[in-house]
Amino acid sequence: MSKADIDNYKLNKVFTAPIPDLSAEDQELLNEVKAHRTTPRDARFPTQNQANHCWNRYNEWLLCLKSTKDEEGCKGMRNMALQVCPSIWSEKWDEERGEGIYPGINVGK
Image 1 (tube, rainbow, N blue to C red):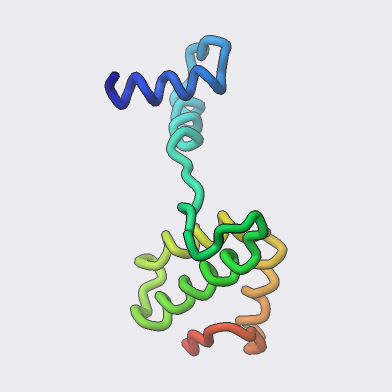
Image 2: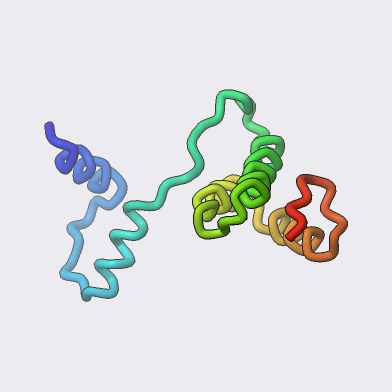
């Protein structure tokens, strides 16, 4: 069984109705949804509560920013943090960083 067959099988397990003809914009959106991945499992955080995983991912992103000064290069780490963290937390931490009161890693632009 090829990778395409496996991907098609997985897709068909989720979407049981045949996929209709799509516009180019809709096809692009469907491809984006198919390609979306969440942050990989991290053995350091084996429990269901992922709060520590979230905090760690967010600070790993900040550490990347601090060491490389390359926001575009650290974009993937930011995305992983946003995928595992509730948006209210990341928004709060972004605001705290802007105000200079964030308790984690200080990037110090």
